[in-house]
Image 1: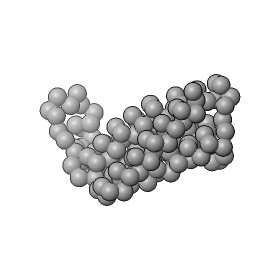
Image 2: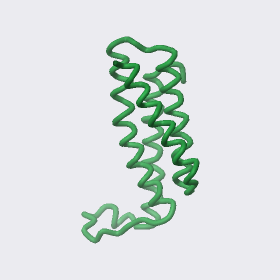
Image 3: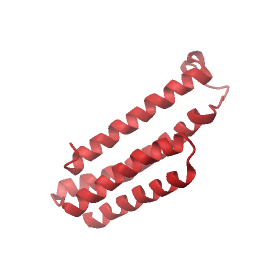
Length: 129
């Protein structure tokens, strides 16, 4: 399951989907289903963990937009290697650590996990060149 880069991309997609579910569940509790189904012209804001999950979700989508093309370029070029697998695994591990660290407000670990994930993504692009 964790043995190839495309599987790691799919697993990360599932992690982002889980984050959507958690954030939406929190928003329903704080803002109410009526508000979430409305046009949201009123502009209410979630607070606490739900707000942090929303920010973590936004960051996770950005991370996906950087991670996915690197993996897909490597796949199209058929240039997966031990180094690309390790970088993809590091990315996924970092993002798995990042999400709860952000949700629970653990800033030092969150920042370190973000940095590791970003560096792993950059390495993937260098390997794709």
